[in-house]
Length: 198
Image (cartoon, rainbow, N blue to C red; front, top):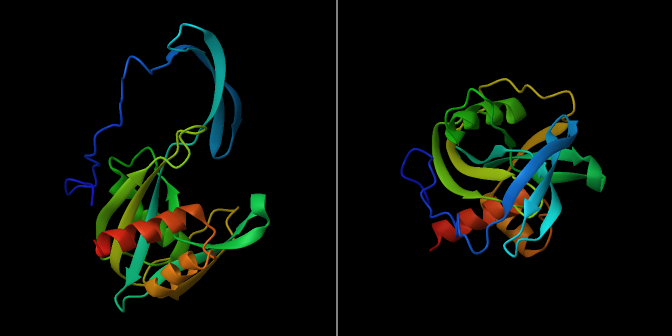
């Protein structure tokens, strides 16, 4: 697991600041804003000194939780995903709030809001940038253990979620069978399987 015990990611920043590859931002403007994300347009100068435009989505950081009950089952959610017009089976997740000093601060809140479960212990699993060619999205993955249904589910107005439990082995089998379509969930399940069996 890639952390120093407090949820902080200690991996090197892949080539960060490499002057041979870095683009320089000459100007930036937000061209579209909606609930959940912004679209930013930048004027950039490429390493060969040519100038062009680049658009990307500003979404920010989120936590994705792999929650295990005391019995060892995984708490999962079935949620309507409008862009793909279907219900996806997935892991609870949610965005960081301004008051969160650390991604771990968001885990219990987001887990309870979406599922009604409260975690016992929480451990950082990994941090990824799932679409860094078009968005600044960051997913912080956490494993929550000894989760109990003692909280109160508090869904946003645009969330339609059914809570269920399954075995971790069933999620791995769904991944093998090409039936686990939610990308966040696929990554979390496979990362945990890799870490646990290395």
